[in-house]
Length: 186
Image (cartoon, rainbow, N blue to C red; front, top):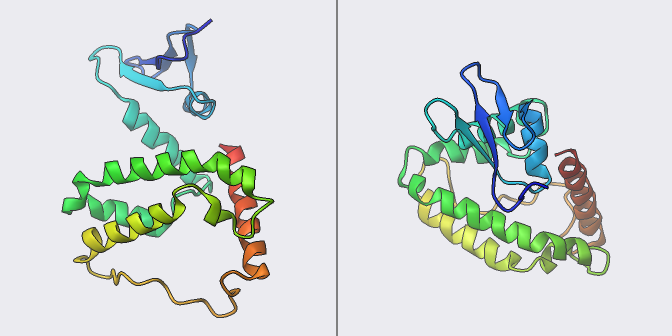
């Protein structure tokens, strides 16, 4: 039985084929995405040079899913990410994203658990309010000098439900179901 505590080692040969060292067979990017979705850590290294190629391949997996229409990253988020490479945000962006995802993971099971018993499912996510405040402060600090960023919340769309209403709750549940469907595809 494989030791799932350490990363699954994938070696890339000169022919660019990817070799699973545990099962002694070749794998595809989709196979690697499957390992990751099942909770397995993966490390991809170049056989000849020993260079760690994990980030490169993870980015390729994300790009392929995005190009197939499995959009997780909205255009404005991608735009801000690209902008961060040209500013002092580049140094803090990785920590910010990592902390945001950790909070999301921690709160995810709690949110699903409480979804049917609370009036506003997002309010029950542990740390949601703290995350929102942290992100607002971060964005004000880091994005304040960038052109096009106002630092204000977008105006309420015409026809959008009132905050806290039954209509808003129904819309949130619908959006949550759509997100769950997208996550199950991953």
